[in-house]
Image 1 (cartoon, rainbow, N blue to C red):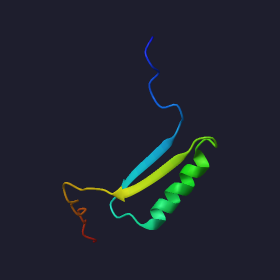
Image 2 (cartoon, helix red, strand yellow; image 1 turned 180 degrees about the horizontal axis):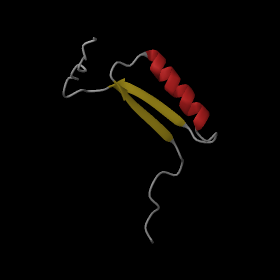
Image 3 (spheres, rainbow, N blue to C red; image 1 turned 30 degrees about the horizontal axis):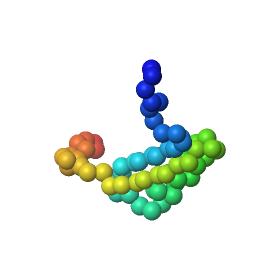
Image 4 (cartoon, rainbow, N blue to C red; image 1 turned 135 degrees about the vertical axis):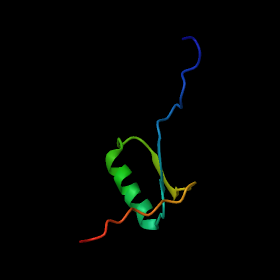
Length: 66
């Protein structure tokens, strides 16, 4: 209890989203969403990056039509 308080003196928010195929529109939408939802006094940054897929997704099983 006598040590320094953890964290930073100024609050901040960083949102990082990983998408399979990100576009500039994704970053714009995320920025708009975070700007609307965050407290007005809190500075923020957003980051959108490509998700690294270790295993390729398998195609969904198709059920033949009758």
